[in-house]
Length: 229
Image (cartoon, rainbow, N blue to C red; front, side):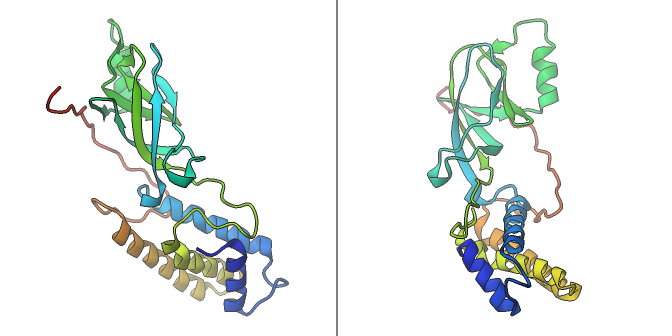
């Protein structure tokens, strides 16, 4: 993956311009925007897979998203959660409103061994409310870490995305040059490259690239226990 300085040099050489035409600040802004667009294009880029732990407290339902402890990006917190595992079972997912109606509106005790999890904002909720200390392993996807610091910085993306980032820079460059046709062509190239990378990297069902936001609903997933429980 190119450094920030190398992206600057590449764009100026490609566009046959200099710093008077396109400043470092302008290119850096475009590059940071491109990294964010790529990161948000899919919820399941393998590069952002994360592992963390949550230690519960008796009587406490909500916990902050954990910090990623997997690999060199351990300074980044989770942005979404996929699975929660206790020592001998997997917790099932439940809609947050449904969980509140089921566990908080009941007349009996709402504490017990946690069997389900839900999310609201940047917190994970456990249901029933834990009645003791449990250590839970969490898998999901992390946020971008703060990668931009200087011209020597490299984007928080693997090498396979370098060409896509260059296409994004060309989109912004041609828009700045008032050439909408060339900008549109490079936007198509950018989206095509993302689709190709997703096809090569993402396991399981393939969903369309999301470039303009969007949210997918997940079905209710029951807890899963090992056969010997």
